[in-house]
Length: 393
Image (cartoon, rainbow, N blue to C red; front, side):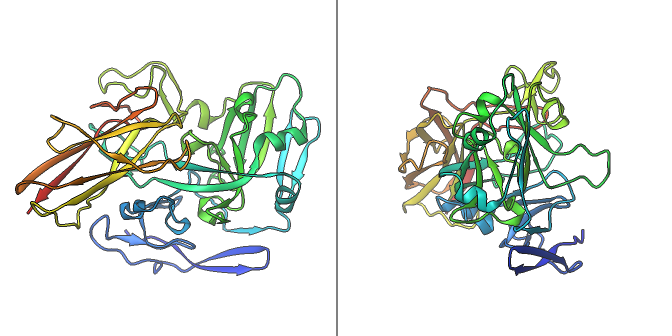
């Protein structure tokens, strides 16, 4: 399929513009990992869709503790995304059940509030969906619909304090500048309870890894909800509304639902009661060795990967080289923050040639261990144990 991609980024004072250049925006190859594309402010990424843009980070990039902005995954829901911003006229609006509605410029956010920062993993709820069996509909992400970054901005509670919250407030909604191609497409609006919005951890970010947030990742402002799936991390954030009723919008009550009992159900017995997905499920992945590496018998091979959850901490990560019959504890790298991913490493020297079935599982600080099996109709919140088959030469 020939895709129309953005291929020219022009920077002007206080303004970012994109221009489209037809069908020559990328070169594609046959395989998934080699068929990479480039978008404005992005290096070579794996293309899932171009309208709306969905770009996956190549696995090799996860050898770095912080995901570079130019490789950070992209996930938009509505096709009419923002292609230009005038930072002189842009405003963040805070309305609803507040004492004083606000209209804040970027300069206001940077000068009228104490800046705050957090290292946090942004991960799509459908990350690793392609590994669910039976297969489920939706974007067939592998492990690259996530990224770890240092976010800088203003605590949401500080913005709310300036506006003043009226008695009886229940929910707070968040909306960006993207829109659907047709009038009846539901606007992408997410919500948090008032208590969550005021907990001091939710951030309205204007920087990502020390730089302005890339356009495709939500420039100029992005809601950062540490420990929660990135469906709540609204990009190009422009409107915050405080409600005295519960929010019942499509993207909270219909989309992004999981079984009320957890994140697991059966294909022949779907859960009748569902709730919005929220916190990041415990999971661990392999990053190295990858499919390009040659592993040789009697020579050391570094096996490493990442473990993460909702911020409750990673107690240990274990590796099995025999398909799960026995397990060895790996070495954990220093903690970068409770909402960051945690890198694990293990030096493995295979004794003989042949096919090995490597498996990895994490245990969190509450004692939860990854499960062998998991399935739900949407392919959300993968937490089942990952296996990597390695041929030793």
